[in-house]
Image (cartoon, rainbow, N blue to C red; front, side, top):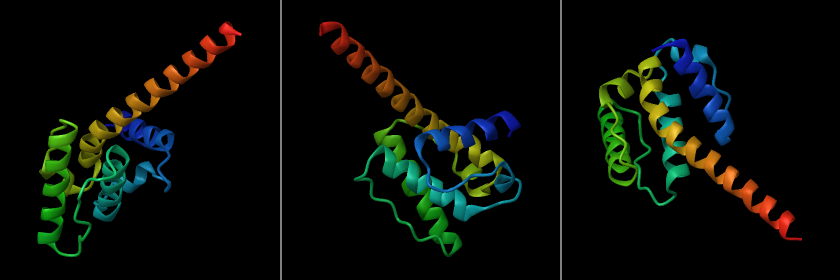
Length: 126
């Protein structure tokens, strides 16, 4: 866990349009509810049809939740997540979530670049 990873994660999530504010201080202590919320949002952002159990009240529910998220992301996005680091729900979890967030951010950035190119092509054609 480094300050750079925390800062990059925070900036990427803001760029992707995550509705809540994320502070670097949130990940100094374990905060599983925030990690679960971010994971659900990232999965929904990647594929709206992902089936994820959102119940996280007990330890067993949290384990099932993390396994379902990791399995879905491995199958659909080919991103392997370390469940132990995610369960810690601290800065090490950020390192794992950063993998998915970076994937979405690159796709978002490429889509914006292509959109800009098509607008330039249209202006030249006129």
